[in-house]
Length: 200
Image (cartoon, rainbow, N blue to C red; front, side, top):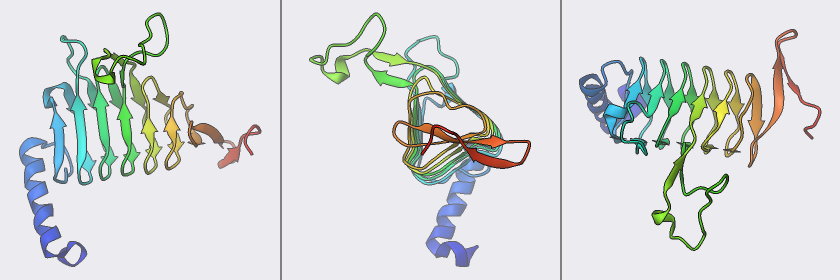
């Protein structure tokens, strides 16, 4: 392990392990630096693993909020993942999230429905709006992905690197692009990922 991480890397790892066992005993390892805001509004399952520089924050829009963020068992998020919840972000079991991923159920202002904010209003003065996010079991999210408010990722789905997900992704499918669209679905009968007919 010393050869793999180097002396100073090994020391940082030991410090992270001590921090994890003191403050998140169910987790596997939380690598420092790690920023969690309003920890009492986050529920973290067993075997949680993080990379460096991750930020998890609950900014409840409702004063009666209990858990804004729910993370299942055996979830791994890599370096510089940012998860921000104002109402509800649920992450299922066995989810793998690559580095520099952004997940949020929040928006500064409302841009659809009955009330829509005026672009002349400074963004910080617009009321926060929320729409829950669900990341189901066994989802794999690639590098640099943005998961926007109101999105559900079906179980077993894969999101390609640098995608921006603005709509629901069905289970057992692969989605890529900005905005993300489904390009393949898994065929359980023959055990292969099949390209869908409307993709190029």
